[in-house]
Length: 150
Image (cartoon, rainbow, N blue to C red):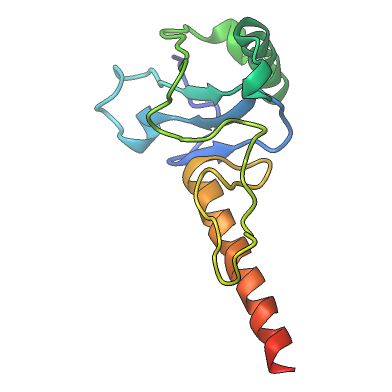
């Protein structure tokens, strides 16, 4: 929790592309003003993940995520009151993929494509990643149909 938002007027989610473990940041107090935190305070939620879930070192990955957070927001950690530090182990209910083990959008079956958070581009996650994988499938379909029309 901080006394001001790290990013003014951010009422959504910021996805990081310059990090290994830090994935995204949201400010719930900006998304739902007056309902999440007391006046004059702002809850921030930073999400991270291991770079490779098969060989994850949760403590090391968490330390690196905090270092990446500090790189992106110098001095913020010193002012922050960290309320919760949590981790998922085993089946994560929100996302059904392992970082570093995404499936490709294309398949060996003509006209069959994989889309969703299990087929994301590097630097994306969740809904944004699912949309990016759908865009990639559309691009592949358009290329295939253009080749057929020639």
